[in-house]
Length: 100
Image 1 (cartoon, rainbow, N blue to C red):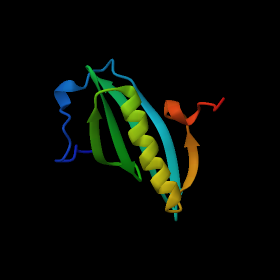
Image 2 (cartoon, one colour):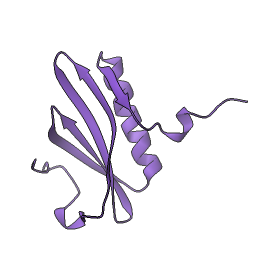
Image 3 (cartoon, rainbow, N blue to C red):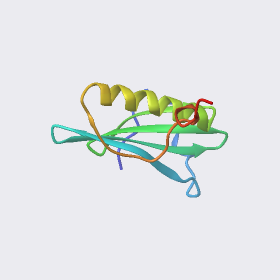
């Protein structure tokens, strides 16, 4: 199991077997991949970033909406840098709103 980075605010004590992990998106470039997972830890949400299946960063936010917004910004930045989307399961709420 990958080691949690020193900059992470999460602790193993917060993880419970009942917490579900969602893979939100995967991007690829030059034979490499990056993906993000999100899970609920108590009253907050943890966003986990992976590069070639290695966990390299984690960020905790207060709500699911903030977690989705954070992951969308990372996704958009990677795609702008030439990473190719393989899948994207969830979009932040304002991305799918229609203008009337």
